[in-house]
Amino acid sequence: MSKTSVSVRIENVTKVFKDVKGKADVIAVNNANFDIEPGELITLLGPSGCGKTTTLRMIGGFELPTKGKIFLGNEDITFLPPNKRDTATVFQSYGLFPHMNVFDNVAYGLKLRKLPTKQIKDKVMGTLDLVGLKDLAQRAPSKLSGGQQQRVALARSLIVEPSVLLLDEPLSNLDALLREQMRVEIKRIQKTLGITTIYVTHDRVEAMSLSDRIIVMKNGFIRQIGSPNVLYEDPNSKFVAGFVGKVAFLPVEVLEMNGTCKAKFEDKTVEVGKFSPELSPGEAAVIMARPESLKLVDPGEGMIEGQVTTNIYLGGSLESYVATEHGELLVQIDNPAEKKIYPEGEKVSIGIIPNLAKVLPNKDE
Image (cartoon, rainbow, N blue to C red; front, side, top):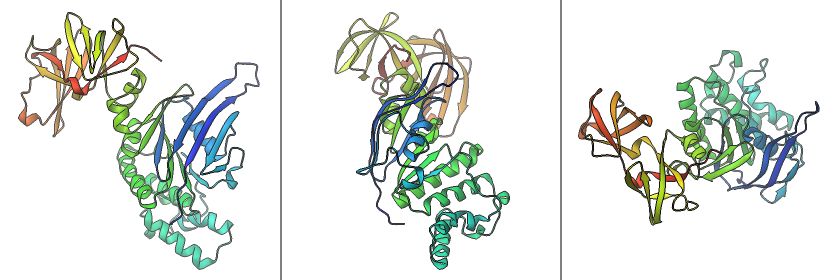
């Protein structure tokens, strides 16, 4: 499978679903624009109804955009049917043929192309080896685990050597352990083949662990595009901050911005390393406080007073839940063996680690 990967370009794409019962039309995707580099794995992430699956289906040809254009490389594929696009899709339901064994399921696309029998056998066994199912070629789908069925569906899509692989929530039917294993497998296979891949999920852990970049969507709009670490450490809104990781929002008033942001929290002044450029002095804002951007100190030494309610030991870190006037806050303590640990029931103060927090506009999108 040495086929050259291609780029994907979405230009001003909108999808409107007309309501035939007289209700308001639904704008599923609203003026989407993004580029995907050859060999890149991009995840469309967002809550149910945000437009991520509709976007994927338009790239695959299963839905047509109301306006805008879609390109694979330099080819305009906007209105091509699915079988005329150099893409392959793995659906949430897998769609395996129950009357065919694993080998025949994977070989199906090659048989439609009338390839020689030996070539089909060699390609099928090579692809099954890639996904770890070489020894199960003769097994019926009903005799496979959920993870194995998912691998068969992946192999069936990969064997036709598409330029772009589309994955629509492929792990949603698996249990937690299998999801974790398959995340590793999908990333390994994608990097081995270097195939341009678009992945859809509402699961932030999947998105963060798999992706080169993530496109966060809400209500049909793209809210932010960036690498996992950029979205986690430098989100542009409360919505993105909350969707990609655990976070607390502490209300502040912006005082001044000059390399850092000084803000007023109750009767204290706090200095934070990162801030949204759209903020202005005097504006109401929030500090985005991830668990690792908070620290526990003795009472009176931090910015928020509280009491430890629960400590959860996780080996390399400890999670302390602290009851405060601003609700329960989660503080992550790395390398707990080297740190002072406050026992449950003890009064503490919570401080901010300035370079790990960010001041954001206090807007609910």
